Image 1: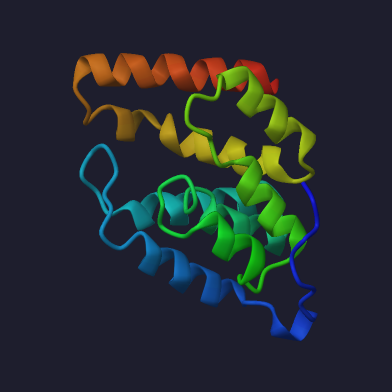
Image 2 (image 1 turned 120 degrees about the vertical axis):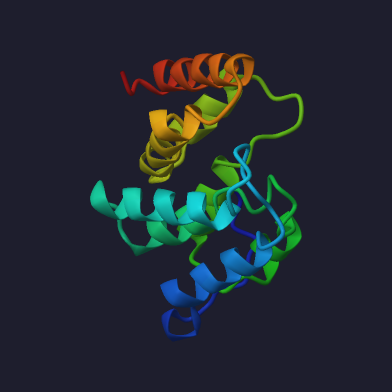
Length: 158
């Protein structure tokens, strides 16, 4: 990632509470595949990152990990306006799947970005939670289970 973002003093960075509020607001109209508020997923991923020993930058990235991909915030805003560390921004961008991108290329970018793997591990753990998958129809559950298993393999998480 290139560092073309303005430097932000540590005292001017968004707090984790502010990042959480921003993420909840940005995703307020969204639901997950089971119809649950999307913020529940974000919270579970952030809590999972913390439980796995992640630091505040990774927790902030967990709250925002789908924000660009889901068009909840723009990449331009993230890069040039968001009062976040460069590392947090890099993790969010690494976790942003691009249209038409192969799973292999996506996994490679995650592995190449310091701190991103832990966030993706937490994301996959919540996405693949049997209780979440159980409420989906059979074909969707099977497709997602294959997708999450393949990504775990590519990331070396098995």
